[in-house]
Image: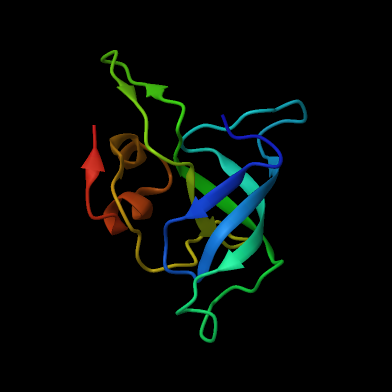
Length: 127
């Protein structure tokens, strides 16, 4: 479960390595986020090779889309899909992707959301 203060990995080539959740969007009393939810995050660290040419800077406040969680999400078929880490993809103010590549597989449920571009950029989709 992702909530305020949770540290997350960034799985795109925007230059950020780790972020911290500030707020879970979607209601005033919303506490936890799962796959497909949007967060407000602060960048805590950058990737070593990308520091000079990074599209982001340490301390920037951006929006992020949750693409993987340790706590599983149950599908309609009854399968429980969980990953080894909590990961996000960074978005700008207009909810467009900052990075141009995504590392690792994603859940197949992204095909049926408004973030179809995320599923097309990932190397594989997991059921």
